[in-house]
Structure formats: structure tokens, C-alpha cells
Image (cartoon, rainbow, N blue to C red; front, side, top):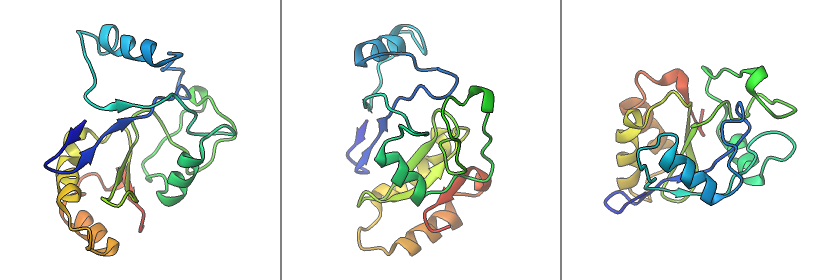
Length: 162
């Protein structure tokens, strides 16, 4: 999904490491699963879906390795060992499907949100980041986010400057 008023791009990166909930082998199967099964009812995503990858374990991509290094796991995260299909499990690993990362306009990670943080919970954050001046220092940007938008979800997110 691209919202040009906020310079916002949303991408989905499928993974099958959480209770094997994403068994699709290719993009066609993935889109058909979304359209006809879950959520179904003809649903077509308005965002780009990337290739299915491993986000944890020995086969994790370099992108996710660096992303997890820059944004630690929020303190309220819970791993379900019987449903976590990778090894070894590290403290900064992605905890479950639908974990979200928010980047600044220069492509640097700002926030990491747990799956229980709903899109509506972060709409104000996305609008603020999308409209923010590129010259604003990151520390000021993160301080503004903490002071104005993160009340109520404190234990469900971390910032790169935590």
C-alpha cells in the first residue's frame, strides 16, 4: 500500500516459522490463500508481498539479522517454544507473525511493535513519521514518538534508541 500523502509504503514478508501458519510455496498460492481462505471473501492485499523467508534461526536473512540488532525485542514478547520452528532461539528473535517495524523516511528502523499492536494503534505514528522533516534528528523524532503516541503500548514496542 502506498499512501502518497504520507510517503508511506507497507510490505508484507511471509514466514512459515510460527506454528507453520504460512505453508504457501509461491506467490500464487499465497495470494490465493488470502483471497479465498484466510481472510477470504475476495480479499486482495493493498500492499506488496515479498518472497517467503526465514526471519529467525540459522537460515534467517541478513536483512532480518540487522533489523533485529537495531530494534531489540519488546519486553512484553512471549515465545511459544512448541510453535517456534527454528533453532537456536535468541532473545532478539521475531516472536510471532505480524510483528511490525516502522522505518523513518531515510529507511532506518525506528520502532518494533509486537503482533498484538493493531494497525489502528500505530496510525498516528505512521502519519507523524510520514510527514516528519527529513532534517529532524533521530533522537528528537523518537522522543516525540514516545511522548505523544506510545502511551498504552509501552511494553509492546521498542525504539532503536532504547
